[in-house]
Length: 367
Image (tube, rainbow, N blue to C red; front, side, top):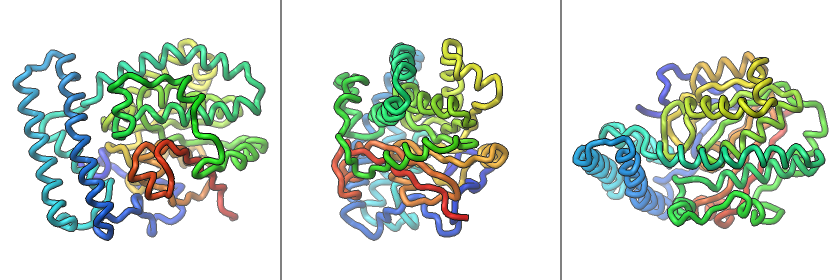
């Protein structure tokens, strides 16, 4: 399984310059210090991922000896790959963070490890669902101007729930994170990239025809952050396509998990229920199997859905999709990029600090 988990891929049709597009701009061969940082980070994080798998497998009643064999094989495969890169970063050709992510997924699948964070995702999603009705009630009671800001703050708040980032994975181990407390303590404006005013000004104009939302993590991220955002677009009259990974990677929500989640929310929320029934809210798998994304290799189903809907707003959410890849990617339509910076190396590359916020709004170029 390589750059896309889908066997039938396409170029994302809203990319402005597919030929010149580079999903990940940080060349690790050209920067030895940055290369060393990322190789070390991937190596240090991998045991955390495998510990999550150990708990997940135990929850399924998997044979303990078989689990330990799988863990040993995954460690050998991935650490062996990192060892080679440590000696020669160009050993496998070009090198960036995305390629290391793909190698990690190959090592896991070869060892028979499919969804290490399944149990963690389920637990986080159940917790978030319990909070959602009250959150939606609070948002609906706000004046429009206040609600628009609160929804963006909610996206940032939800995005801290990332078990793939070392800074935040430790927080969940200690069980110290509370959604409302995090929202109250978000970094004050101006943010590292701060296009909130431009976005609010755009919302004063006519609604977009259709939006595609690339969502990130399971749990509070998608449940309390991106789904309220999608819901607000639907209330404005915009059609919404939600796209998530086809296959598991870290604690990113998958297409199947997202479908189950939306169905459960639609059972008590009339906005999502009516939008689903009218075909104004659709879910399409992205074809991806990594926490970052190469937009020249999305599923053909997603490309077709974007064209059919006449998408004029692209939303990339999360550090992997909006910063580590696609930070400078330009689209032929309005584009919104939202993320919290949860890694020291990423923050330093942007002359920022950990937990700084990124909100980039890039209007459609003139025709």
